[in-house]
Length: 336
Image (cartoon, rainbow, N blue to C red):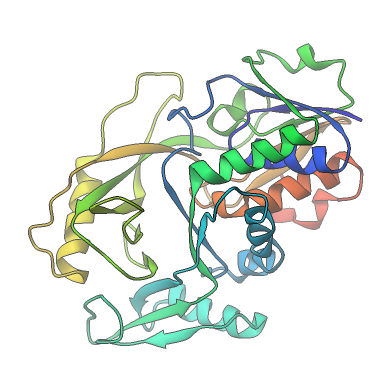
């Protein structure tokens, strides 16, 4: 079967890898040079985890998370850093209590942490939910690994902007994984937002972390060879046109990051050394969107700022859909 992939960030590259491993003739079309910083797959680090406030996603990751270990075996060096995840918040917040209920119900190991048991300062009613099956991946190595595997198994990647799906009539199946440009090809209910993250001067050694609080700050231990550590702001997103000139980091988001450093890490004078941005392709409910737009074309928008950890799972799903082995109706929440 001849399959075209439109958009070769992580989702498209994982789809190309899986289809090529199954013996299909795959061509991936990418409008920008690999390694570009205009989409959502660039940067050094991405969180991987099973823990979610919404147990629906944890259940999906029971299948999806182990795929990271499979792909790492194909890499020239390790890229998965299982340092664990600490989810911080009020012990009565549904984002915390629902998460613990889902983890217990699904048999995912976790521990609760209190003041003095983590690198963070706690209020009296705070709790930390720690899951060891989590950490971060080095995104450039991940992308290189999945593309190398795809190429070794016969896939081709072409630097070309697909203007219309009509260009791809020669293909038996088409997978659209175009990220922020998905609306160029299908009526997908997403908006494109610019998110802000930054590096903080100094050292942080501990698990990756997420705070259940307005702004939803998340962060990482120091990446290799860095003397600073990364913190991002999941909320406070600015809607943009992905083809228009980009604005700079959001000052309000940087203030939220500084506030987190002061409250949680006791760094009242935290120095931001590298503020920057990335794109979120966001739905109103933050769920992903998948669907067939004709008998041969499947569109995938695993988005809203939490899709990267699902890359291998999405690649497998897209291959199953192309082969007629998966029914997207199984997940009505993801319907276009």
